[in-house]
Amino acid sequence: MVRLTEYIVVIFVFAMIGSILPFIKKWRSDLLHLFIAFGAGVFLGAVFFHLLPDVSASKDVFVFVLAGFLFVLLFEQFTAKHHDVDCGPDCPHKHDVVGLSAFVGLTIHSLTEGFGLGVGALTNPALGLVIFIAIIAHKAVGSFSLATVLRLSSFSTKKSMTLLVIHALMTPIGALVAYKLISSLFGGASAVATALAAGTFLYVATMDLLPEAFHLHSRRGWATLSMLFGLVLMFAITLLGA
Image 1 (cartoon, rainbow, N blue to C red):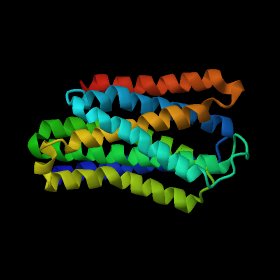
Image 2 (image 1 turned 180 degrees about the horizontal axis):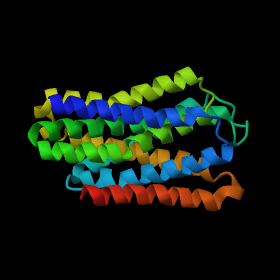
Image 3 (image 1 turned 135 degrees about the horizontal axis):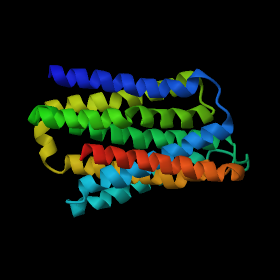
């Protein structure tokens, strides 16, 4: 339990470091959109290099990938209908919806990886260390990506930081819950949570972040490179994890 406590404290610190960076100074809009493209690459990499391979052995849970995708779709449509659809490509309300969608996807993913960390730390200390390293490798990146999206929204700094702190706490909470209720995770609970995370990530990356990143026509080349860099980073993490 002492080792797990050390893990989750370090993970929380890394998440908050990534969360604070976009708020240190006022970033230019075109630069922020490059970070969003990078974030889209990170999310796509998480789906295809990490989440889907984890559930590939359980074919029945793929329906939950679709469920996660549809959940964010319905959530976004329900939220967006309250806003003015003619306010242009830089509409802060649109960024609000994107930010909340990204928050939902990252929260589910963070809980899922916390489950894995809790199980690994209890059943196999060596496995727990590997999972911890894998989480640290992308935790600051994911938090930075979420903070970047929220930075573009009309949310106050206080509201954005509240969401970011909640996000940073999700992996520690997931790890502690798994540690206490580990017997319940040996069924399909972990696979279902992973599948739901994959669906939400897939929606956020393809329907929210990529259109947002590429709507500045003059920066599409740089946006493409930023997205590919995010994908390469997640693939490298996969290789290191292997």
